[in-house]
Structures are given as C-alpha cells and as structure tokens.
Figure 1: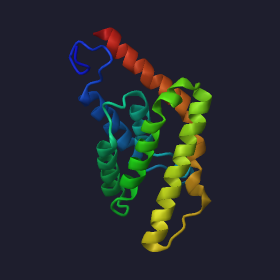
Figure 2 (figure 1 turned 90 degrees about the horizontal axis):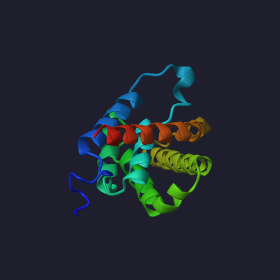
Figure 3 (figure 1 turned 180 degrees about the vertical axis):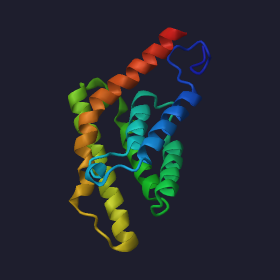
Figure 4 (figure 1 turned 180 degrees about the horizontal axis):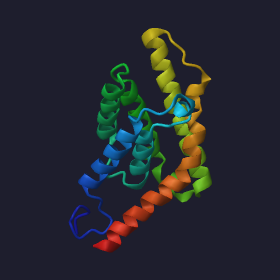
Length: 168
C-alpha cells in the first residue's frame, strides 16, 4: 500500500494544511492593540512547527521558505527575513521530530519557546544588518506566550485531526 493512497487513515489533505496556514496567516495580520502587540506570537510559525512535527512528510523546507516569503510580503519586512527563519526552524524541528514527539507537552512547550527565541534572534539580527535598528528585548516576549499556548494549540489540532478521521 502506498503511504499517500486515499485509504491511508493518517494522510492529511493538502487543502486542510493550506486552510490551516491561511487561517493563521490572517490571524497574524490582525491589527492588535498596542498593549497586546508585543505578546502576540506569529501563529504561522506555530502552525509550521505543528505540521513539521506531526506531518513531516507533508511540509518540507521549500514550503517553509515559501511561507516565510509570503510573510515577508505581507508584513513588508526585508525580503528573506522570515523565509530564512522559517527554513531554519523547520529544519531543526524535522531533525528532532521523533524526539520531540516522545516528550510530554511541558517539555514540548519549552522547546517551542526556545525555537521562537531563535526565530526572534534571527529576525533581530537580520534587522540589525538591514537598517541598524534594534527593537528592544520586548521582541522576545512572545516566546513566553507561545510556550503557554503550545499545549492547548497542540491538543486542539490533534482533536481536529481525530475528528476528521472519525468523520470518514
């Protein structure tokens, strides 16, 4: 039996992955109030980590790079800033995918928070090279939010996947 055949119960359709990225992409583009802006993580990165962790055969580095380019265009950031960051994060998650899945949600949340700190460091570094501007340490605060959100987000996505499989 082919791993991508229609009878495989663990296969995720491409339209569902695309829809999930579109939803998180539009959440990222919401104009949040200034008081909450620095606590809001990039939900597209959170979704990318989820899909690379749970379905590494569906999401690869090329897709991560393209998602980063889309974020660069949407946020008017220097071209390639999100793309290189998303590619590095996707590579690291794919390399440690089996180990991360074995850990409980608490350790996974710490790991995802550390990945977001790496993302923020890449973004700050590329911004320093681009226009010599440092946005302050508040750029790293969404790592706390993303670590707190991860167990709930992961459980929600797993439940959606089980619901979709049981509906068939």
